Image (cartoon, rainbow, N blue to C red):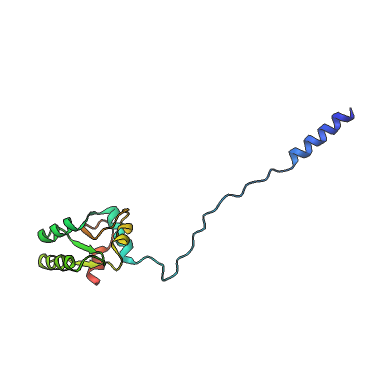
Length: 138
């Protein structure tokens, strides 16, 4: 009988002790400083790619600059000078506004959600973004 009572008390004490809860990992988002905040051009371009109609690449950009089909061009800052002069000439001849993106073509590609460099983004429909108003400001 003594053994049965001892077993019961041991069982009770084990049940009363709470199990160790593993702490859930929390994702801590760091606030961006003023220097690190995304530029309005980058956020508008990302929204245009998601909701509007765009084409990527230098060949399609040059073709659309000749035809005047596009509403806006966003050009990376590191494209060759001769290509830049050609795009500028064709865009001004067709009356299409052009925005010079400050970053490289790799940065432009990452903003657009692509894993490759993009030199020119031709915008046909802006979608839900305010990209055309940003083009008029510049």
